[in-house]
Length: 195
Image (cartoon, rainbow, N blue to C red):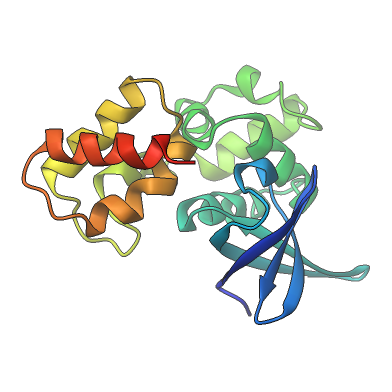
């Protein structure tokens, strides 16, 4: 029903955030609530899950993270809470790579994931995460990222910034008019250092 909320983060709690959209506060469970700050204007990608016990909203920083959540939900034995715990315990790139490589033992370290569930994750998702693993090579709408921007994003990660930090500034860099990776890197560093 909802695709995303574009609003103000009014509450940051250990398992959720509250997003104020037009005066209505939505409680949104997130694998990374502390990636947001109170008072921040943010776009949160939403998945609404309806169960017998109620309707729950889950939120993500990017469309790709939401897609990974949905893929985890498609695995037999993985519910929303387990999917969130898996995504919270590991950066999404490493998780996707472990699934692609069939690393069952690696997946068993996540909360509530035994050998059987880990094997099921690999069986159901291996070969289906290539789009996620390669997301640095494209924008959210599928258009190609300019090579200079792609090089800059990879350089920022090599400098020690996390994937989540780089994902947060990528939309701003996509709108930035630059010709070289160096220009994108300087702009990216300025954005990352600005709190």
